[in-house]
Image (cartoon, rainbow, N blue to C red):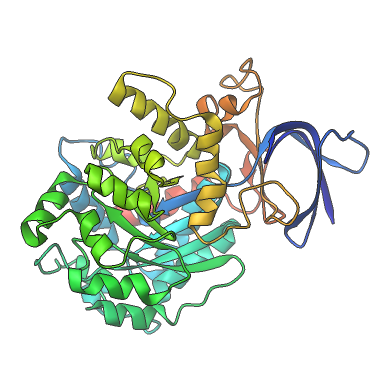
Length: 438
């Protein structure tokens, strides 16, 4: 059994002083507030919050940071640069890159990642000897970094509605949703691994194959990119006479285990369908602004019944604190009013709701029986000093660099703001240089 004394900690009913937690077998066995520090206890200074859940990640996009900001363009021009990186990855290099990226997440307090994984095969779409080599590389990378993973294995079989795959997209495709399902069925979960399903988008999976994806893993998380771009909505209307959300509703894709990623350009009917089905709305604000996607209707979705979750997506920034506050700040820009999302609501999106959407409902809270994740945030940095040591400090003042200690399922993975086993800056530089150097 391991014991930690938290100077301040966020418990389900709010912040408490002097919280003594005991951990055994990777879970909290006891949580006692108003305790006195004593010899033999390990002290966690600052504000301790539950581990954060990054609900939407494309690990290999991290190689694009700083390299896609040199010209004008749109999501579609950015996508061509992304394909250039995808073309060069192998299972070994993907492991190295993802391990470093997940290590960067750990440094920012992330203890679980939802990896939206569609880079499955070799060049030309030729399967590896192990057809799941790329997915298994991601699982091992997360383990090496010390975080849990929901591998959201993604079906991607078309280059657009009624369009063939391009040369790079061949690597993403199993040929059909049925063939995708056969490959995915060989993947195995574990205590630290959830195997989930995803359809890339209504562009990447034809209407008559969406139900195959939706029903393959009936108890597992189910994710999809939804209405990220106006062009997607226009193409869907032209081909099917309905919105992407309406199409998903008709094919059984909208459920209480589904996450609609981005959900940016929605009609009132779309919002009602998503909320009425209990579909999660996974917003990725730093990517959505980087790609000029737009601002999604987060408040309308919440009021309709969709729980908010958060992701760093393309990893233009890996900072869940920034993602949290960006949801509220974007609403302020769109409405010219303040106070749409409270700090507790945004922290719930980044913790308990995020973990639940990834198939880890026993994480995201500091309470007996829950997975023992702890994230200590400095209250004495230039960003947090004098802010009052409240939840508003964590959401609206802190950044990933204010995280000093991270404990994931009872194991310390970050101490004194450094990863316990990996040199993350060196690993990122080495792996990304190898993928981007001509």
